[in-house]
Each structure stands twice: as C-alpha cells, then as structure tokens.
Length: 355
Image 1 (cartoon, rainbow, N blue to C red):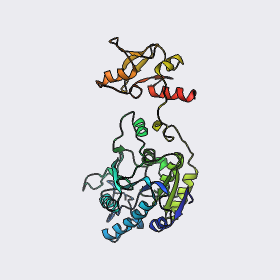
Image 2 (cartoon, helix red, strand yellow):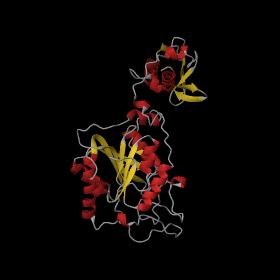
Image 3 (cartoon, rainbow, N blue to C red):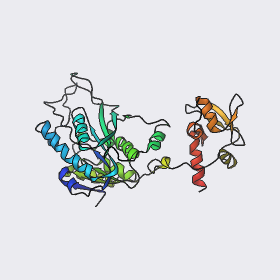
Image 4 (spheres, helix red, strand yellow):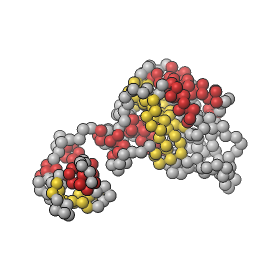
C-alpha cells in the first residue's frame, strides 16, 4: 500500500480499497452538518465567511448518519487491532458520531475538549459563544490495546498529568492557508498544535496515520514533521494541490518528544555519578517544580535540606510532599547552562554522552 500520498475521491469508496488492519491511527474531521441559514454578519455589518460548502450539506439526519456510518465502518476495518481513532466534531454532530461509533463496536478511551482561546464570537448574541469542539478518542473495541504515550504528554505538560481539556488557539496568521484573493482556502482548517498533540499522544515514529477528510493537509504536514507516515483521502482538487505544496515545504523536525524518549525506561545513573562526572556540583541547589530552593547536593550524591536532614533525592522529595515515597528525578529541578532544568534531564544527558 502506497503511503505519504493523497487519494482523490469519495472517502467511503476509497476506504473500501484499503487493506484491513493496515493503519495505526486515524484522525477524522468529517463535515459537521452545521445547517446554518442566512448570512452571518459581524458586529460591524461585514459578512462572516462560515461553512457554506456543498460538502457540509445533507438532506436530513438520516442521510448524515448513513454517510458517517459508511466511512466509520471502513475506518474500523482498516484500523489495526492495537490502533486508535480520533474523531472531531461540535454540538451539531458529535453526539450522533459518538452513538454511531459505539454501535459499531468502537470503545471510547477519552473525550477531549479543544478549548479555543480565540473563538469566533456569536455575532448577534442569540446564544453562548461556542468556544470549544469535542474529540472522541476510541480504540477498535473494548478489549483492544492501544498506544498511549503518557510520559510524553506529562513531560510536555510541565511534569503534570495531562488532562482531557486542551486550550489551543484557532489557526490564524501564516499558518492559515489563503487563496489568491486572500480568503480562507478551507473554512475549517485545524491548527497544527492540535494534531501535534494527538500524534504525540497516540502514535509512534514510523506509524501510518490515515485522514479520510484530508482537506489542506494539516495531518500530513504534522505527521511528516514528527517522523510519521500519512495517507490522506480528499475529493477537492484545490485542497489536494494546496496540501501537497504544504507538505513538500514541511521539514522533518524530530526531537526527544517525537522520538518518544520519555517513554523509554530511564537509564540507571546514580546521583553520585553525576557529581563525580561534573554534571552536578557539591552544594548545588535543587528546586521544587515551582522554583523554590529545597536542598543542596552533597559529595556522596545525597541531598541536605535546611533542617540538616540528609536523604536520597527520592526520600527527600517524599518528605517535601508528605508522601511515603516519590521519584526524586521527576520532582527536582536545578540550574543547568543558565536555565532551571528538570534534574532528570541531566541523567538523560549523561546517559546519552556516555553510551
């Protein structure tokens, strides 16, 4: 099966031609069936360009459900048993999608709320400003295993467990693709930050990411940048042309997070080893995650606090947190090259430089 390409045509029909159990992750951003009527006007009277495209038009809910049931059925077939799918929608369609997915056998892992930090206002004040969209992250079935890069998301969240509410701004500025007249090329282009977080959460380097509503290629661009493969399906040739150019100009920029180095078993490096090798100095301060000095490093690799207690970093962090035990590598920070850095980063750096 060819990858890193875009197939043009109807998504359900093209999905039928794909091999079963062939993709690792699916991101689907289907039509929302928004059912908007009349013109939307900004406060100043200017027309607001919402979603008026033909692909968002359906006869009724039964027609919409039939359309979604067809592509969701094929998505479940092509998804590997240990893969997962994330479908995005809004209040107009997400509940119908959720019911369809559960009826087809998908198992909901999480619902994720994408909070838009710069939402489009409700111009006429007739209802609340709709400032979020919902994502359903699902496994193929109830008993299926799936990739979840817990430690990676935790590291990206400042060492705190990631929540299911993500605040990410709408796609604006240079990221927003425009036509020759300067208008939005695609009305619902998703921000790369959203796709980046999803792929870092649920995929591994080299995985195949399927997007059956490829649009202008956000999924493909992010997949390439993070060292994943993609397969897009899109019916609009203008979108395809823009997506191909966008992906071509996207460099591969893999880092420790995209390589999932946080998920690897941490190297066995003693505090005393870091002191002896000069990565830590005797008397060097260790700090809490909030930046408060808590203790100092001793020559034997132990640490001492203001009460003169001499403990390992694990027992010291447990003491400070009033816990029975705690991993000191995950708790303490220290200054390295002028910046407050997680202590664990020095352990990883030592392991990298000493094989």
